[in-house]
Amino acid sequence: MSKRIALVTGGIGGIGTSICQQLAKDGYTVVANHIAAEADKAKTWLAEQRAAGYDMHTAEGDVASFESCAAMAAKIKTEVGSIDILVNNAGITKDGTFKKMPLENWMAVLNVNLNSVFNVSKQFIDDMLEKGWGRVINISSINGQKGQFGQTNYSAAKAGMHGFTKALAQETAAKGITVNTISPGYIGTEMVMAVKEEIRNQIIAQIPVGRLGKPEEIARLVSYLASDDAAFITGANIAINGGQHMC
Image (cartoon, rainbow, N blue to C red; front, side, top):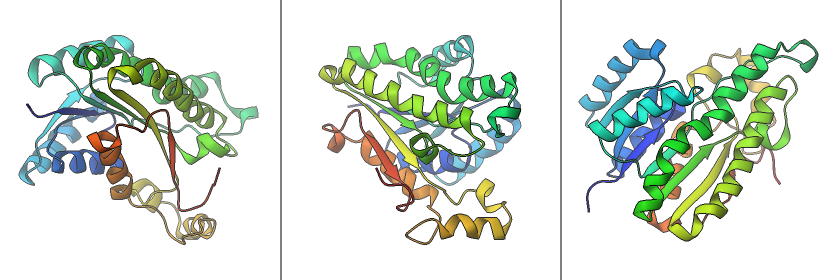
């Protein structure tokens, strides 16, 4: 059997990089998506990953645009091959209370965090159905489960991801495709570590295990859901938050 191919949207970010590296370790050919503004960063990232021995490719595309995703998908299929594993990981935040939230901040977050799941998944699901095997793994958030002050846009988008997961899981289960959601809590990425130590400690104090999560822990969960061993798991939302929110 030829090597399975995985696409990770937002793949050159903190969690995205860990996911890409883990999937490469698992023996998959990995494609990391990035936006046009990250072109130079992506070149450097790709060189670093290949130098470290990872079988990686990059693909430029705006996940908020269906047309851009279609063009990206066509290029991936031509240059790398058909996607077997899709990790919808791309996301942004534009926080603010609902009272002060402008329409553009609402739409930007919904487009990148939720509409992207349609835009990207739509490009590859037919191929998975034809092959009778596939994995769609959607990276949501603890705040999509419990909500968060100042994040009506982000919480709504991340909650919507799991609604998508449950419906698509039912449509594709009989064809050998699983669709699942992962909802991370606070993870020790560069962005979180850049938060003032006082505020970061307040966050950690709310986490029963007493620490931030590690990007590698998210990556290993993705790895399991992508494997043949996880074939009986579909439509699930798996929390990985150190006990900060239990449901």
